[in-house]
Image (cartoon, rainbow, N blue to C red):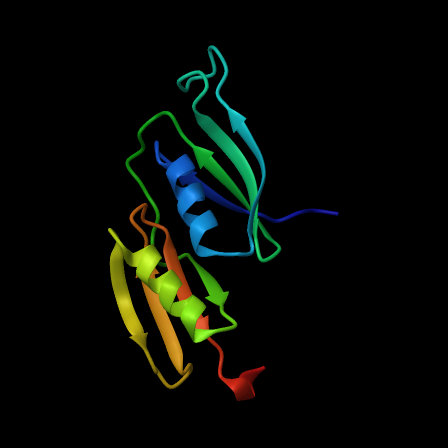
Length: 135
């Protein structure tokens, strides 16, 4: 069987991103972290790759030593449904700090409470509180 994971490539900020996401989402789990060894391209001992999951969705978080001419794009985002308005509001506040709010937390018709933010690392998040009648 094949396996599909979301791969997030950072350029020197992956460890900070994992720490932020761990503080925002109670269902964020770090399963393993690999660090660069001697002669691997990165600074020995620095963050290389983590296998993590968010509410059961597997992600690979990679820190690339070379600087690339590209970064994340909002056209690919992680969509999160929350159980409570309090958790949603806290996530919007933490993830947008140092980033950008593309759609502020509001009722957009398709959702009573929805926000689309980009965190300080450039990762795009669609944050939603599903309507009671949509479950």
